[in-house]
Image (cartoon, rainbow, N blue to C red; front, top):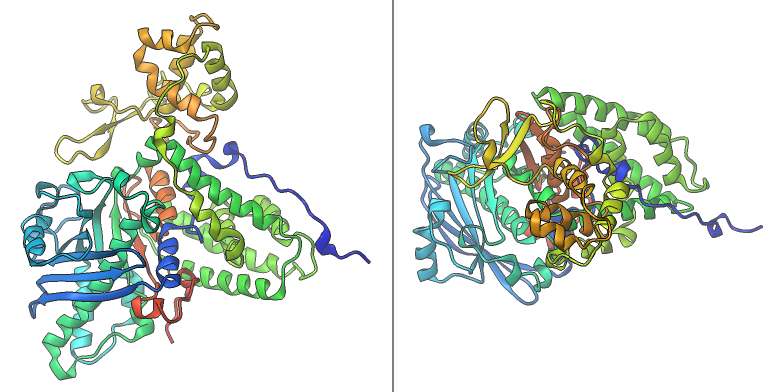
Amino acid sequence: MKSLKSKKIKISLRTPSEVMHLPRLGSFHQTRLSFMRQLLRRLAVEKWKFSIPVWDISADGYGTAVYSVKGPEREYSLVTFSNYLPADKRSDRVIATAWDVTFTLFDGIPDTQEIDRLKKNVPFQEEGRLNATELVLGRANKSVRLWNKVVTALSEGKQPELKDVEDVGYLMRTTAVYGSGKFGLSDRTFLKDRVELAMPFQAEMLAVYLVRCFVLDLVEFVAFEQGGENACKIEPKLRKRFGIGNSTGLGMAPFIVNHPSLFDRWIRARETAIARVREIPIMTSEEANLFSMLLESCYQNAICWTSQHPIQISKLKNLRKDLKEIKGFFKSICIGDQFPWNKLYDWALINLTLEGQEALCSLILEPYGDLVDGLSSEMAIDENKYFRLDGKLACGIIINIIKHSFSWALEYDYKTQDGQARFWYVSEDKLEPRLGQRFEEDGSELEQPLAIGRDIKELYEALQEWPLNDKIANFLMLYPQHRHCVRRVTEHREVPYGEIRDNLIGSNMKPIDMLRCKLSFFGADRFDPRSDRWVRICMYQNAPFPNELVCAYDDFWPYSGSKVS
């Protein structure tokens, strides 16, 4: 009898019309391809070496520390400055001017002279002067209540209360992590050929990982300074429950709009991974057991995941219900069933919310690292290849591309108040993206070109009055305001997943969906919106510390259970 394993089916990638809408993008979860997991996998495989060449910290926890990491070819150092922060200066908003901790990722190991230079600049953030030797700039604030509880407990030789740790998840949260040439930092152009930094946001992810190491070392150090011989360290399993928080606002949202070819690579890698797993004809008992174990951990983590915002409360309710239903349905799938993951996926489309569907898409990838992880090398792209326009293209070709690939943009009515309710602009003080109410606030004349659907519809309508056989260059000579849309339209032929297929200035648009989508690719967890415009997250919760990376790396750390034995 012929083996069932010989049978094959071809699963197509989900289409952009299925994937590229904000409600689904805003339901994404971290995956094996997330940038944090890419980084830690590399550090573990290549056995990077960690050290702390400088620890000049006072008993109160203020001063300078340097954490260095050495890879096969290069070394990098996190240079941190811990400062006293009065209560009236404490703010997570981008307009803040002082922070508990400021830091930079330095290219190499800084000498005393370099540290002195950085000390005079990094604590001032945007107002400081930075060089190309600095790759990342950031700052972080304490979760004061939990910080004080942990210090008090450790200084008395006790462990922090698990509930307190679970309720917050971090001792500090970053309020900004800058890279890619901002404020004088090294431009990505100079780093993209370094294999360890070639994939997106690897320098930023390394900086945040080292900040987590510093924060846990710092809280234990302060506790020992207070408690002396009575003090203790955090028990290793509990220690891993501390991640690094992050407060992220609108500044992050336009990135995925402004980088369509890069965004396409991220989505395409994820969709390719999902399709590959759905094509698997038979699962082994080991794969089924691993999936079941991670599913249960995911469910337990969802129970511990809390939020006070109505958007997330509803999503969490759906997620918990959906994960419970996945557990029940998966029990009906037998080891010998053909194409079990595709069967599970098809069932999910009918029975689960978007939140559950996308959580499942992340989970089914986990048993198949050999099939999935290599796709991470395809998540970067030279965006300059699409910069030049082909002016010889006929206007009729542009019209046809819009009809075929941007029909969604033509369906919206951008002339109504609801259709053009918002406008994106850049704040003068902090050079950060902001979202204004067009009919309630001044400043729409400063609008940024992020209303892609509206602008493409305007291009389409303008081309109706132009000869179809004429070159697009002649059209743009008279109407240069359409140049950015012509570039997006022609680029789209090669980057079909590069466009969000929604009205980004409509009254119903929720920026939080863009934030969550991007943060899911970072590998973030515990999304906790404080409005539809900013969100708190947790990064590296459960991740191994350096000593565990090099000896026994657990690639499934995002699914570590909530209970600490």
